[in-house]
Length: 149
Image (cartoon, rainbow, N blue to C red):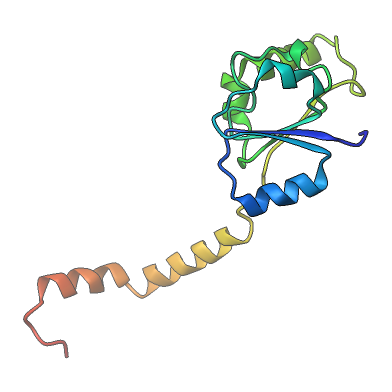
């Protein structure tokens, strides 16, 4: 993949520190937290970083002449594939073989983002079940005046 120079951030409210990091990595960063992509910047965008909607519904794929990659902030892309008109158009082009792999636009998601927190959550909930915390909480609410032995 050739180097990416122009990024559009769509539909994501980002803190200033995150925007500063993006501006250090890309020559140009267009930031549109309201999920609106103005027509005048569409032709220059190499990459889009967006929420699950990916590309605003009023944007046509042929307006994004420089686009090479779309990065979703979500762990999956299934909803995006179902509701985003430009993504559906891209999928149809690839299925009809009107777009080679070299000239194609890639779509990435944040799969694996929860890889560190899920095991901790599962372990904590197993402990809760084995220790019968729910029953202890219920007993505490029911017997506020009784002494615990």
